[in-house]
Every structure is written in C-alpha cells, then in structure tokens.
Image (cartoon, rainbow, N blue to C red; front, side, top):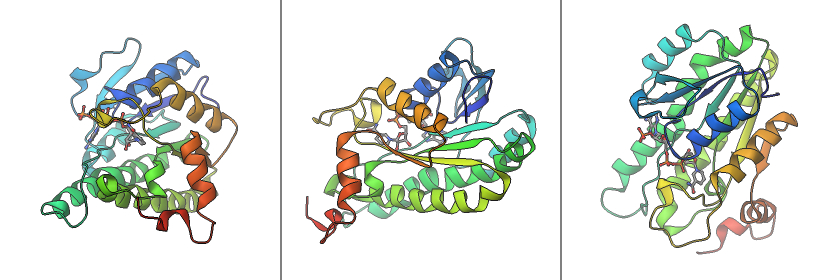
Length: 233
Ligand SMILES: NC(=O)c1ccc[n+]([C@@H]2O[C@H](COP(=O)([O-])OP(=O)(O)OC[C@H]3O[C@@H](n4cnc5c(N)ncnc54)[C@H](OP(=O)(O)O)[C@@H]3O)[C@@H](O)[C@H]2O)c1
C-alpha cells in the first residue's frame, strides 16, 4: 500500500505516535488525513481533518465509517498502558480497560472500516502493537497481555481480510519517547523513526515489522529453547 494519494484515518492522532503518523502521511503525499481523537479539539496539526472517535465505542466507529466512505488506509494506533503487575490489587480493572482499548478498540474500528476498504480496492490496516506482544516484564505484565491479544487479533483479521485484498501490517516496537513512557528511565526511540519504519514496511507490502534492535532480538528469541519469553525479567 502506497501512502501517496491514500485517504488515511489515524486513531489517537492528537498526540504521540498518532500525531506523527498523521504528519508523515501528509509528508508522503496522502490525499486526505482524518485525525481521529476522543476530543477532536485537541488535534492541532495543520492540514488534517479532525474527527471524533473513542475506539472503545463500536457505535461511534460504525457511524464514522458510514461518514468517511473514502478511507483506504487505517492506522489503528490508539492505545493505553497502565504499569500494572498481574497479581496486584486493581490489576483486573486495569487489564479490562487495556483490553477494551488495545484489543476491542482495534476490533471495533476494523469491523467498521473493513467494508469501506473493500469498496475502495482493498487498502490496508496498520496496527500498532509492541515488543510486549512477544515478551512480558513485571511493570508491563497486564499491558503485555493486551498487546499479545492484539497480535492474535491482528493475525486473525489478516486471514479474514485476505479475500478482499486488504494488507494487514503488525508494527512491533520497543520504548518510544511519548507521554506513555513518561517517567521510565530507559533508552527510547523517537516517533519519527518508528513511523518512518511503519510506512516503509507498509509500502513494501509487508505483514509485520519489528522496528528496533530490541524487538528484532526478542522476535528471534521466540524460537529459542527455552523461549526468550520464559526468562524472568
Ligand atoms: N510509547 C511507547 O513506548 C510504545 C511502545 C510500543 C507501542 N506503543 C503503542 O503505540 C500506540 C500509541 O501510543 P503513544 O506512545 O503515542 O501513547 P500516548 O502518547 O499516550 O498517546 C495515546 C493516544 O491514544 C489515544 N487514546 C487512548 N485511549 C483512546 C480511546 N479509547 N479512543 C481513542 N483514542 C484513545 C490518546 O488519546 P487522548 O489524548 O484522548 O488520551 C492518545 O492520542 C499505542 O497503541 C501504544 O500501545 C507505544
């Protein structure tokens, strides 16, 4: 899928990685960029069309899809991360919130927009996943559950959408310098590097991209014996 002349919808486009997806889509010559946000007044990027969408609301996603019949590329970017260990009090509520956003959010938007993409020739979904789809760590344990589930969801959607010619790209990545990682003292990638890798992979027709060295190493470690994901961190 080539971004030039595409009509793009980015979820969670008011800040962080989503705002950068919107910016680079314009820079790559997208025909139109719909920047979706829970509060569209928080979209400040010039040249985009702000639209309202809470991804956890399936009715809102369906109504938006009925309105935006020209979309042929959807970036499923909106996501949240609570730093929660699984056995801590309150972890269930936190995990449910993350599943609603990081998993059902993608499902709601994909179910709403799949017919739009089909009518426009197939198009593509780019789903923002994580290195945490493949490996867990104490503070990211509940988040990792949601991203592993989002990985399974992405693989399932790819199968279901193959018949209509829709490319489904999973983007896996380590720590990025956004609000989501504020306070974490770890090396972080810049948003522009991550988005550039995502769009390059999309334009090469790929189904998966591991952006950074950490994520690539974890991916290689999945087939090790024992698997890298079994080592305590
Ligand atoms: N930062 C990292 O290290 C990292 C690493 C791997 C993957 N990711 C993934 O990258 C994606 C973007 O994260 P980020 O780092 O840019 O985080 P961020 O700066 O915290 O931005 C999150 C975005 O998601 C939006 N959002 C949250 N819940 C939503 C909902 N229910 N409906 C619509 N929008 C919603 C937020 O909107 P509001 O402004 O309304 O809250 C915001 O625009 C997420 O899927 C995240 O899991 C991030």
